[in-house]
Length: 245
Image (cartoon, rainbow, N blue to C red; front, side, top):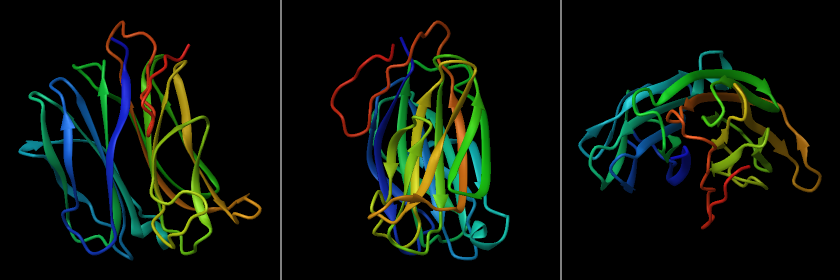
């Protein structure tokens, strides 16, 4: 069975919240849940203390709290996983060390993954550029997942994928109507032993151009089961699947 990654749902919050939730997340026995929490809390980003899906505790895969000064100190990202032992519909909850005023929970799932060691390489970055990305290591058939948090302070600004990433979630796509907390998640299959993916900040809808901005990103690799073959991704907001040749 080839590794497949698909978007489930997302929830954006925009007022003080120490325990943001994403309700009605349905998973089947044997699925791998990948839950990301991206946040923007002025002057005081918050660590994730725990995450749950119903009564089930999730395991931390990667987390980064911005610490480079300026708006970096406002933003953070974390990704947690859980191998589903019994299918159900439950709520994802991220418990934060303190309230965060803006953010999003994004849920993905994987099938055909390495059940012994689902997560391979992880990485993070905090950079002031237009085109931010991470290069992760793995094997052909693995899938890299990328989440980015920014603190834009203007409208007419948005994030769009680069390096052929599949966009799973974008809190404020073009033309960018929200003045803060541009958050995005995407994934990409490995074709060799490395995979580069990310998002580019853009602005000025009437004549789009790259705009340098503080970006904090996290990345993780979901490993394919041995002999899993090529990936068959399920694209966000589409009702069909096609095998990548």
